[in-house]
Length: 452
Image (cartoon, rainbow, N blue to C red; front, top):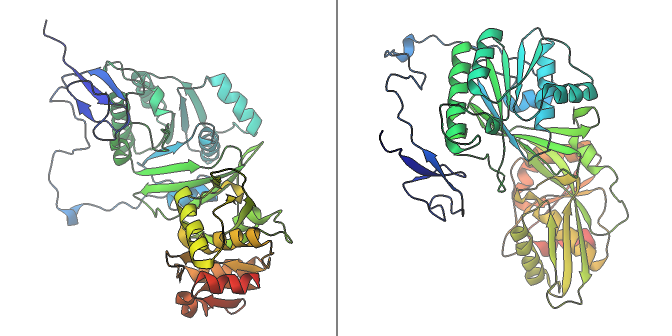
């Protein structure tokens, strides 16, 4: 009997090594290497989608697949208008964010259209899924449930049932008995995804697979997992808040610029048709330290409230706490505000919060953050009917942003009367007639206009 060959594989990025390493040279994570046995694969086994022949591109028939509606307008928006047949979709998100709830709702809505749905769960029993379905108030239609983790048994049921939609929750719990490694390992996840991909393409069905995420928020396992699937969508949001954002980071059949917004309620996830109204509800009118900006989430403008609190610190090292924005960006804005506007913030505790649990990643909110901080520091109220849009540079200048017309129209629709923007956006903003435009060049001019 020959010696069993083994290798060490990083469970974060999939890097392979002949020996154990404390630190992965690819992703720089510590203690992520696991020993796995190397199996000799048969050369006759077809692991791809090869047809075995060369075809001229112009001779290949172009099939226009009819999209399957999911029953959720927000999910259809993210997918590009619905589910495309023979597509493989990877859904990621933090534990408890609502992935299983969203997919169970989708399975129920698709089954009501007369399509057969097979929901495979490796984390819950059939009784547990039934309890959740009863709580959500559905369960009729051609919806079948299978609690199984062995991929060979799952393949047999797929052959027998011939579902139109397959949901696998989650990919990290399923294993192949031919691979000598634990479920969730890189080898298992990569092989199971490859099997599901081949079945999906061959059977002309749709498959959704759920992937766990790492502490950094990425799909657990090798990056090749995201390259193998057709669409990758992330479910984002703070568990302490009721709002969730569905965002596509890869989509072969649609745009990656669209997002879907949901609200988690007792009866499941409910679509948010007017997110600006939701995020501005309960906004204090006569309070200082609050400002409103317009952010572009996907291709949709959303009005968001920024809150700031500046108070004198008796400690040697003042605190800088941010929620919803990058901490390094906030530190930069504080330095610009102190240097270019003359505000003495070095001995103050500063707290910045984006209401609603959203994570702001674009720089168009810089002006609103600066003005909210100055408003709290000087204890002066910003006009509640004024919206602030602009990016701040290191010299204190106010730079232009994209989609200014969309942002202003959304502000006008929500009842705002004035908008403070950069002079670089003045020509484009003139297309919006119903709102007063005030253009400024730097933060000193902006603060004089807003806090005068």
